[in-house]
Length: 360
Image (cartoon, rainbow, N blue to C red; front, side):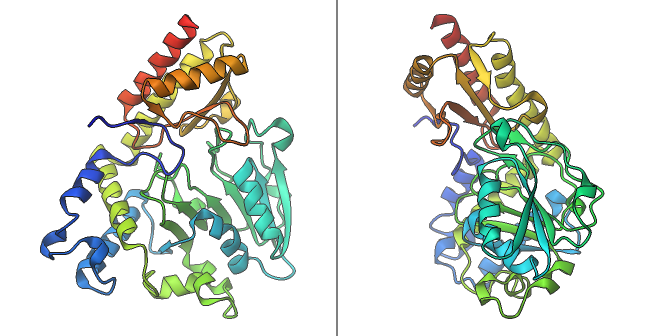
């Protein structure tokens, strides 16, 4: 069986090595005679998997002991609510940078729980760019500033994160975590659904500064309080054990590639292949994002007519490419080139784009 040329936006491609490793251990995990999915989450065998995943993530991102690493469920969408539930107090305002649909959704949930304000927005520019943010525009008594580091639908990405802030910085990094080296110390809380760069759907990673845990009210429902997870090593209830196991395999694979510096280099090469074809096409392909805000994870573009776009997607599917349709809310095309998408697959897509343009 040949592997698909998978450019899905999420759930997305997983490293072939990780999948084969999971396959080899599926029925008999490390001599237990059971699958990981059958292990008790209180057993020593699963405990080793759980702690290894945390350790690998700490190592790859150089996460200090000042932070807790938590495994939750509910995806980033639940974090849209949990962040303000735990961090937004009466009399405070939470500030949001609006750079796409997911930041809009995060703001909408926070508005149900307290006072909020959009500090910057590129909505009027059809979310084609990451607007400049003046740190002095955020009062020192604000609850936090929330950003979405990468915008899958519009193909934009923060390349320089806000600095000089006097308030906690919260980031939804669901679609670009582990795509490059990261100074975790710039952030007070990072959350990410796993299904793009970390592993399968069903696991959500939260990296939270321990100092912030004091903000969580005891009156919160148990499963919506970050302290519940921090005090119990994310084992208060049954976690998504198989998902965490696969996440640990993905992290091992990243290590094997040479870590985040090596991953960033390959991601840059992949993105350049597609953006170069877009830029050289003389308007046949039109990138959505402005050049200084382009994402290295999601390359979004349209063709010069609806007919051409339809033909492109049809022929691409016939050629074995999967997941190139743009998000249903904006249309067009989107190539999601997360860490696990091989360079050779992106080379094939760039060549397909070139050939289609010449033959259309």
